[in-house]
Structure formats: C-alpha cells, structure tokens
Length: 228
Length: 401
Image (cartoon, rainbow over all chains, first blue to last red; front, side):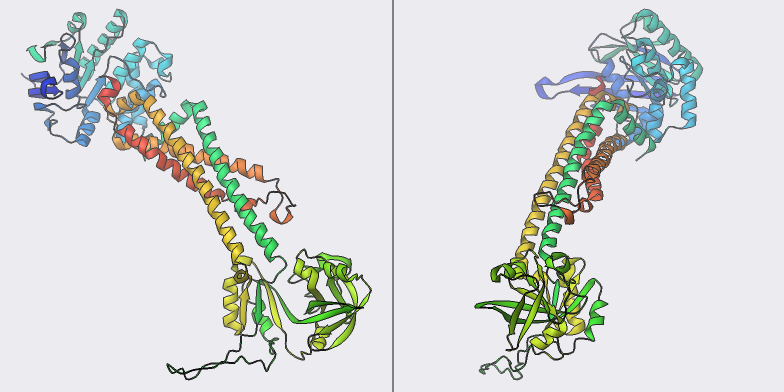
C-alpha cells in the first residue's frame, strides 16, 4: 500500500542573478517523499543539492514551480507562516554543527522548541534528555560545545533536529566533517531514529558509503533530477 | 518579551564577562559625569541663590502706590495726574495682617519694620544712613545680624544701635561710643553703639543701622503704622508665587526678590542650559557606545542568529534578545555609575558650608533617578537598530548552508 506523500515538488526552479549573468541552479525539479522515508540526495558539487535542501527547508524561496508539505503551499506562504511551519515540522542538520556556544548540550537540543514556545519547559527538558540518551550523550548534557568532540557535537545537532518531532529532517552533508568511525556512528543513529521515531530524512551527500545506508537515492546533475 | 529571550540575553552578558564589564564601565562613567554635572550645576545655583538671598528679604510688603484714578477717560480729553504726597507711605493697620501672613504656606519669618533715612553726626563728620527699626526677637529674622556681630552684642535697648563695620571704620566709631542721629523728620537723639556687624554686603555694612522698634517709631515720628513688612520664604525660588498670594490676601504691594534680580536668573538659566548640553553629550556618548558594541556583538554572533532563525526563532524573538541585552547593559551600568557617583560625592560638604574656592556640589540635586531612567531608555533605543539588523540576518548566508 502506498503511503500518502508528505512532500510534493512540481516543476521547481531556482535562478540566481539576472540577464546575462543569470544562473539556473535548479531546473524543473519534480519530487515526492513519503512519511518515514530515508533518502540520499547525491550529486557532484554545484549540482544544486544544498539549494534544493534550503528551499525545501523554507529558508529560501524558489523562482518557480510549486511545492507543498503536509498540504501547506510553502511556495506562496508568508515569511511568518514559513517560520512557524519550519519550527513545527522540520529539522535541520548541517555539515558544521552550528551549536550555540553559550548553551549546554541539553539547552542546545531544547533551543528550537524553546524558540517556538518562548520558554523552556519541564517536558522539553525531559524530551531533550531522552534525545541525548538516544544519541549516546547522556553524560554530556551539561557540557558546552567547546568541551565536546566533533562527532559528539554533530550528534547533539542530530538530537536538536528531532526535538520538535519533525516530519522531515533535512541533513546537508551531516557527516562531511567527521572521520569514518564518527560518520558511521551518526548514520547508525539516523537510521535508528528513522526506524523508531518515523521521521523522514533527506540527506545530501557525496559519499556513496552514506548513500548506501539509505532506502532511496535521488541523484541531481546540473540542477536536474536524473534518478529518483 | 518571552522568558526565553530574557534567559538568552542574560546568557550573552555572562558568557563574555570581560567585554560586558568594559561596556558597563563606559556606561557607568557617562552616568557619573551626568550626575556630577547635575550636582555641580544645581549646587552652584543654590550657592549663588543663598549668597544673594541670604541677607535680603524674599518679599517686601508696602503700601500700594497711590496713583489717582481717572474716572472719565473720554478720548481726546487731556488729563493731568498728580501723585498724592500729602500723606506718608505707611502700613497703618498692620497688626491684623501679621497672622494672615504667617499662616501663608512657605512663609518662615515675618518682620514688621520702621525704616527711614537719617544722618550720623560725629564731630564734623556727617554720614547718611538707612535706619531699620525691628521688633524685639526679630533682629535676625531677615539678615542674620546676630551671627554677623564682630564687636559688642546684638541686643537692642531703647538707646542702643547696631552699626555696620564699614560705617564704624569710616567714622572711627567703636562699641560703647555715643553718636547723634538726626532723622529725615528732623528729630535728633543720641545713641550708644551696642554692636558692630559685618554682613559682607557693602551697602549694608556702610549705611545700615539697626535700632529698637519703639525708638525708631519716635525717631521717625510714626505713631501707629510700619514702613514695610519683610518676609522670608522657603524655598526662596517660590517667592514670586507667594508674593502674588500675599498681594491678594493683604491688598498690599508685594515685591519678590526675584523681580530685582533678573540678571541672576538669566545667569542661572544659561548655566543650567550649559549643564543640559553636557548631560546630553554624555547620553549621546552612551548611545553611540552601546550601539557600536551591540553591532559588533551581532556581527560576531551572526552564525548563531542565523541558526536560531533557521531553527524557527521569529524575528521578534531575535529583536527582543538584543534589545534586552542592550537595555540591561545600560540599566546595570547606570546603577553602578549612580552608586559610584553617590559614594564619590558623599564626603563633600553641603553647599551652605562650602569655603571660598571649593566646588559647590549639591548631592541632593544629582538627579540620580533621572540619570538611571534616561540611560536605560537611551540604551534601549541604542539597541533597537542593531537588533533590527540582527533580525534581518539571512539564515542561509549566516550559516553558509
């Protein structure tokens, strides 16, 4: 039985610049993702992977086409609606962890939920503790990012992406800055979360080893999806 | 302003204690200058006012001018007015007015006086003087003569007078000597010099003579009335409004000291304006300092702001974090500055005890609360622009996604 798509992208384009200097970064992207899917987004540098993730993450507007998530037309939503949608339904993991240096691991994990609610609550603290347990960092909850290793910071970033129980986690080269052992550890974690929590993952990567651990491959070449 | 914004603002401040302390020190210095200038300008005004009004009446009540009224003022008619000089200027019915005046709010001393011109004759020397007859116990109500006595005593028996030290020097007079006084009414009488005073006001020390009220009444041939009623009020700066109330309640002509000292007020106004400009500059310095520091902080935290925005933080949340951070720097810095200024001004003597050459700083006029309130407001305003800039940071550019 086919699951209902959580994400539908139709004829999506993205152009940068104008006139002679205009560059077509994304061309006629058509894509659908189902709930609980774990997909790898592959392609060489400059193929448009990060741009596509940024648009799907509502951090950038597309030039044309349409895309909706959970029935919400994100192409035409206002900035405030996109911000609210992002905080409620999406999780992000970047190549660099981007943890806030003044907050502890636990506070960093709580941050997206606290931003949305305007306060930190006991239930958030509980949920963040569980996520840190899940990523194997229960003994590092009060540590600041500067006191943790690169792999540990990236695992905190994964936990942070999951605090709001997102429908879709967008991960842009999440293991790009990690050694093989740490990268495997993070991917094990992502796989476990995908299976146990049901969040969908769209992971951009150059790494075939990482792509092989995903259920689906989406290949981008020169701004077009060549395999999906 | 959400609790999370408050938490993050405090976290930012405490995560870089050195930088925060430096910023707050700058604010504290500006606030100290503000308070110091307020205390100095206020103290200087108080000192000048004290020196000016200390020995003069704040309000003088006299009979109104008796200008004849024009009953038929037809246009084109020629009218000749002649001042009525057939009667002496005196407040004939003065006793019932004293309780009314004493009960008027702000009045602290009332001294009915008999005044007149006279000549002091000693040998071939003749000197014109102004005679002031005061009631028993009211000698020092207007000018503090008792404190100004440099020889003899301040008591005023029926045949005794007190003279100014310059007059005593000019005529070679000493305590205990007898001089003859001839009033402008042609009456002469001998008096024994009971004391010599120095008020520090040249005209008073050269030309004033104090004597018993009853004796003055006889000398100036004023059987029932008084020449004038002199009044002291507190604060002295309210003299004009109190004079107006007294004019209405007594029907007498009331002249406040401020009417004869316009130049002093113009000087004090100019001084206050100068102080305001200096205080405004210290506020501008605080605004520029906080705005620059906040801008630098935001540039340094650009990636953090970007990631917060990417994770769903609204622009309002980002603005409130940075506005609160700037406001806290201003508020805490202002409290520290006010405290430091208070401690620094604490050992200084009150304005009334300032010696010649000393700075007349009045701590009570330091505008401490105003300085704290204005600085906090200025810090908040200074943070708005950088905070709005922070809220406009593009998360994609900031995190390099």
